[in-house]
Length: 200
Image (cartoon, rainbow, N blue to C red; front, side, top):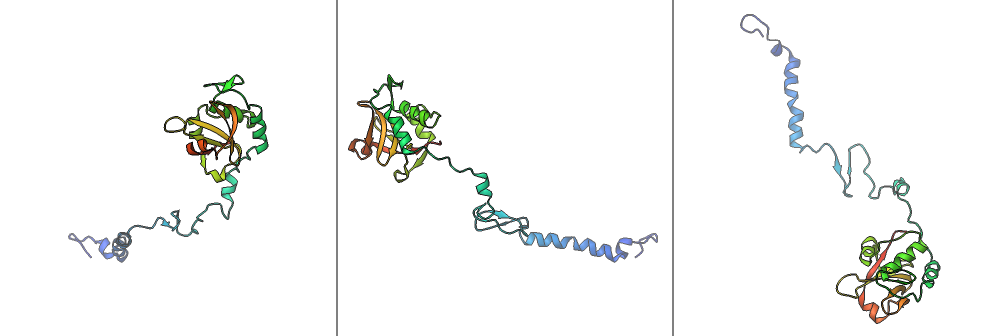
């Protein structure tokens, strides 16, 4: 087609230009109509994967082993006999508020001493600090070395002992000094708050 002045309108004369100028709108219109969800898909597991790849497993590493290769197994806790032997060396030591030696110990000082002797590292110096650092566990899952906590003075944690297995625990009692008691004793049973496991 000629323009005024005798020049050729090459855009209208070229059928490829006409086709290209209109086909560019077709994918854009389809994109809007389909909601633009072309990047990824969500599975029932709540994980995201990209088209062309298999959906991920609900448990990463269950078949490929990635979880087991990156997560170290939990270190074994010392045995019941190791905790009992350490406790036996302190039985009869008098209670002393703030104490941390043979002259006298308080409850959290005593549990800290046992951890230093048996495991080789200390734990927070207060009963509340030990409560906050430990991982909550049920009574049924307690093992020797776990800490047991009580509410003896006002609300909240105010006393701590160390499980020796079963229902027995060792602690620094303000009236009896370092001793062994039972969770079934009425006094301790009524004041029991829970158990915590410290990292070895």
